[in-house]
Length: 351
Length: 111
Image (cartoon, rainbow over all chains, first blue to last red; front, side, top):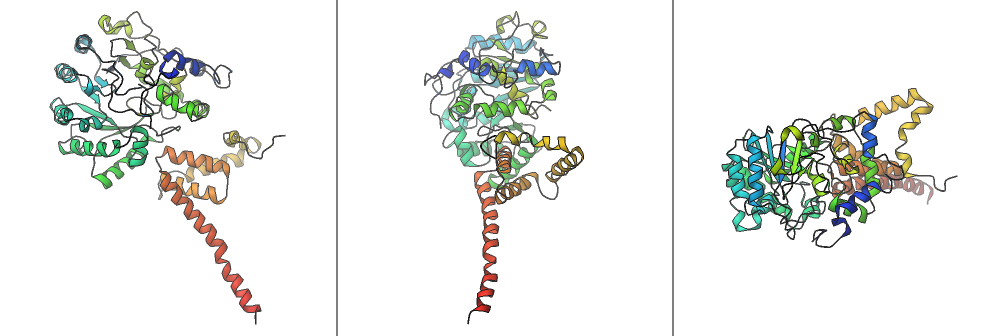
């Protein structure tokens, strides 16, 4: 288990340029594997263009109470990048006028932003159709001040999306840290107790599955079935949907791939599983990602690689939905992660 | 000439066997894919059976393929190892059950 972020460890992979170099050199430079641009060109899908905005994803900070081994954000307790109230105010102005049907708050642990609750209260007044908070579950059990979060979420009809890499303790704790499984189970039971995730309940509770190693996720429907059966039988837990998300080869997962000698094989697997149908529905075409300091990106992964949107509009303060629509999506080899097999997005499979 | 009989990269070329006999190759792969579809047994159960059989026939390609397949399906290492012990038990049992034949022979020949 990694105890510190790459930033804290002063790892060279904390530098996004270094990550991009790795993703463009070696097997991709030699031509052993095709670059993503060339691959999507084969089916006439280059350049990828942004369609009408549907999901506005806001990253309110990289601080987290966990240090997961695969985290693409390199989040952790030592990360100090936190969205200010001023930037949140700028986001609220955009939320009021956007045509997007989904607002998606992520982090780090978004709840650790000191202005999180104020922001949720204000944003919920706008009456957006689907208001997601990506909560890691353990935050609810980490400190007294977070214990009432389930009731807070219920008050604002928040759609909770939480990570759960496996229905067994061993695999979960290996990826997310010792004790995470037990705390997550307790948190899920508490959420169920107030109605979250229950069959027919309008309080949505979905789980995210990320593979616990250098392999791709299996069939989302089959995994959901197995998760539901095991969590219900073992712990009496209900949830709605499972999103199977492929680990993208960036940040801490890239560090893991290289350190474990799996990088090249993993990239081969991603390229071999390339699915042009998934390209049609990749999330960057209907999503916009806002960073803690208000800059705009095609997705959360590009945010972490510091690849800003290819548009004259760069910052939330100068937001213009018409100008952003139709922009060319910024790509690199990490994009193969979203086009492998059934495809992958923050909402799970895309085909 | 390559120095080993097995190359992991060859697993990915499995489909190329159809190039030298399209009809039988296609029939085989169609059958293969049908076998692993959910039926009376789940795909997950079939994957574990395949893993156990792979070890019994000691096929490195199959072990590679069905270990990866199991991980993708969320099959735990405890489940994988139990499946292998089933293979091991049958395999060991197959040797030892012939011990009865040996015993019969000895009992017949010895005074």
